[in-house]
Image (cartoon, rainbow, N blue to C red):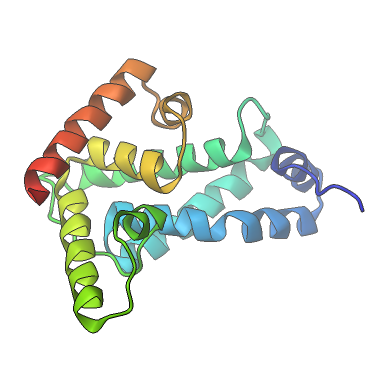
Length: 184
């Protein structure tokens, strides 16, 4: 049994003209990327547009790609930069609609029991959490989603967002305080 090539090798292969390498990368990362964008933007139409733009930028950057960080970190950094650009263009910040589908964090925050009452309670808790996350300032929302949904380290989040570890910790702390306050 041969080991699967790493994302970084696949990206370099794609840059050298191997279209199948790109297809593999796309299959590996499409759901994670789309979920991150959907939860960050809150609207499917905006997430779809941003999703396409991220992959377009990956394709255009292929000849210049250098594996200085994990491919997934580089991909999320592209997505994060697009989100920041989008938020800057939309100022003042508009409230987000609630996103369809829940990430692993939201699912993990609610216990599962099959009774209809429990399911309704879970749904309401998920709605409140989605709304509370959506109400966070963009920088805090992105850090929370990267930490909780993507389970990235503070250092990886810092690479993606272009800020230091302490800034990431600070944004996370303020975001969690706001979430606790809103959900209390």
